[in-house]
Image 1 (spheres, rainbow, N blue to C red):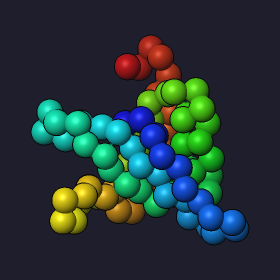
Image 2: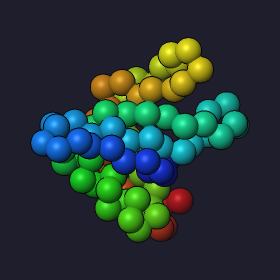
Image 3: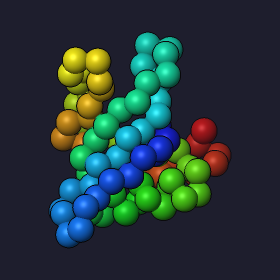
Image 4: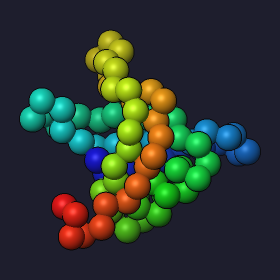
Length: 81
């Protein structure tokens, strides 16, 4: 997954991140609400154009994908791709 859109208003605790990924071999956008530490890692990955791995419950709501209970975000190092 690659972070493509970052949103956190003011002093909100959670930051919302849209990730680009593939689901069933099709490109999809997935939105996740992340706690501050994970959001900060997603921001750094976005700046460096790095992929990330994040654990959660993938759910389709209408025509959108959401990653609920997102946790354990880690940045993929170049030799892991």
